[in-house]
Image (tube, rainbow, N blue to C red; front, side, top):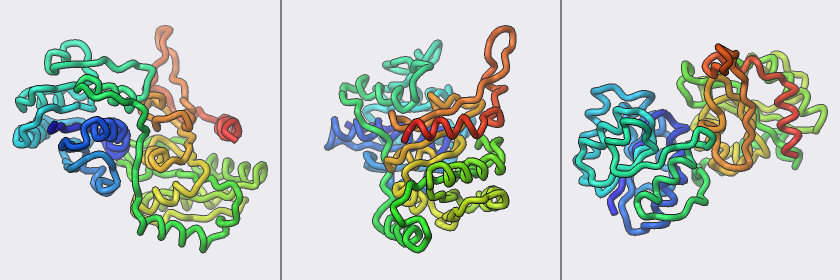
Length: 334
C-alpha cells in the first residue's frame, strides 16, 4: 500500500508521528510510506524510522496558508496514493487531502470536517496526540498500537556525545540530569520560555545538593543567551554541552542522561524518542496532549485563570510553576 502521513506544526509533531509510521511499517513491510512533515523537521529527517521517504515542506511549518495547502495538494496528488493519514487539526490540511483524489483519507476529524475524510476516529481531549494518530492505522486495516516515539541519532553523533561526556566531569557514574532552559530547536516565538533563568539555576543547585546529581545544560545554538543567564546564578558545578550544535548530537547526549527537564520545546520529544524520561513545564499548551508520549514522562501544567467559572488555558503561564513543584515531580521518578 502506498500511504502518506501528513503532519503539520514543527519538529515535535514529526517525532510524535513516528509511532504511527512504525505501526504502518510493521503491518505493511512491503508498502511505501511517505512522511510529509514541516521543514523545521528537516535536520532530523534521516533519523525518523518507519518512513520510506521523508519530504519536509515549508508549507507545513505552523498553520497552513491557502498557498501552502496548494503545495501539499500537489505533493499528495502526484504520488497517486492509496491512503493518506492526516495528523493535523488544520482544516486546510484536510482540504488538501480531500482534493488530492486519494481514495482513503483518515484523520481525527470532528464536526463538519468529517465530510472531508473517508474514515475518522475522534481524538480524546485527555490523550496524547501520538496515541490519537496511532489509532488511524486501524482505519487502514493495520493493527498494533504499542510503539513509542523513536529517533536514531546515528553512530557518528553517538561517538561525538561520548567524547563530550568523557571529556567532562560527568562521566563518573553519578545521576545525570539535563536541563534545557532555551527554545531547543523551536521557533523562539512559539516556545514557552516564561520560566526564568534564576529558577533553572536554583533547580540545578538543589538537584546537586540533595541528590549529588551531575547537571548538563543542553540546547541549540540559539539558546546561548538563555544558558549564559542560567550560569550566572549557579552554585553547583555544571557542564555546558550546548556547543553540541546539531540535533543528532544533542539527541545522543540526551540518550546518555537519566532525565531531561525543560519547557515546551522539541528537546522534550527528542529525549523521549531516545528513551530518556522527561519532566516538561507547560503553560498555555496542554501538556497531556502535546507533550512527550509514553509512561516515563511527567507533565507539570500551569493552571489558567478562571473566567466565568471555567479555566482559560490560554491565560496559563509556566511562570506559575514553582521550583518546589519541579523538584517534587523529579524526586517522584527516582
